[in-house]
Image 1 (cartoon, rainbow, N blue to C red):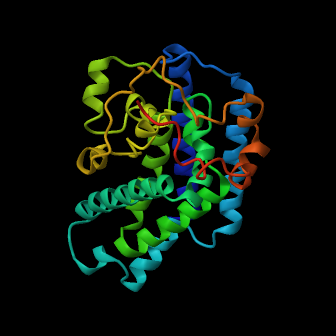
Image 2: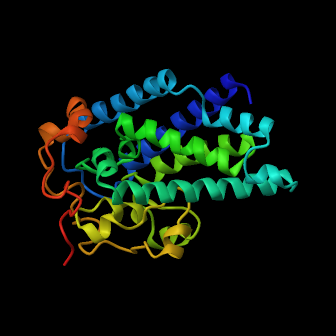
Length: 277
């Protein structure tokens, strides 16, 4: 796929999903927001812009470019077989999603990585922009992990494009502050991570934070024992964020978000967040 076409496809889906979820949040919000929206959105979207520029300047090759290189060199498991293209695309998407799930678990388990990832969790509210709020160093590290996964798996380039579009879209969907009927949520979460499912992951209670790691598909949480159906306090009353990072004047400021991983640690690198009952 030509780079210009890839960029156009990704930007088109990004803008469309962001608009749809923003309108849904306005029309049918799940929770009442607790902090001012304008500073949060300015900082969260400003971080997206910074990450986009940093990725373009600092990453010498994209995941799609890596897939094309792997194909030309015969690298990766899927290049060792000759299966139908549709099957390889499906298997590649599943394998890449599992890699992202395992990466997410790792970013919670290793203190140095949690320092980066807690920028995402420190958001005091949970809406569509939370799904875009990641520290620049985490974005770059995630990109390197993704490149390694592409080399090992050997997916078709089109599978990587599909996966990246899905990952970006589902991240905005499952972080959105939207209300849907309980029956619909129960049906959807067999196929995709829903907002109610992922919101549990943003609780200040550790046993809830360390659950529901999936981004695209929920099956890894079901199979690997990290699924939590509902937050103990209920979705309307649960506390979002990190227990000791509660100052709106800091948490929702771009410069503070960039500096957070390098601030003095609290306790054991604040990994033992507020325990559950």
